[in-house]
Image (cartoon, rainbow, N blue to C red; front, side, top):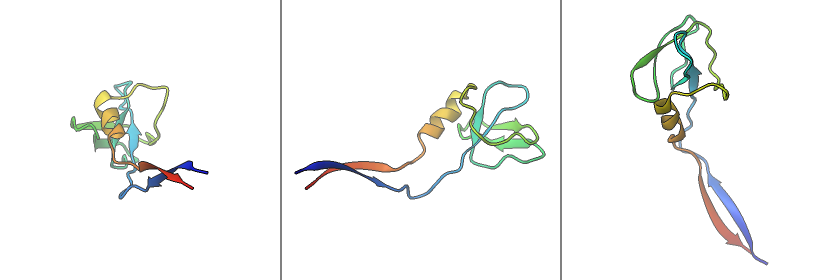
Length: 89
């Protein structure tokens, strides 16, 4: 009896992404650098310069809040696991 199986290769490198919302904006931006606890500039993953992270801004994605389109597209394009289907007996 044949079955379909899915193998997933682990990514070669992992990425930690932090999400910040500047105080003067309602849009979240992604960064690969931990935001400073005291607040300050962080480089954006979307490549459009820096944004000001507020103090103690946290680092989690807020799924009910808008995203910067450039940062979100860059986040989705990060390398990830590669799936492969194959038949087994």
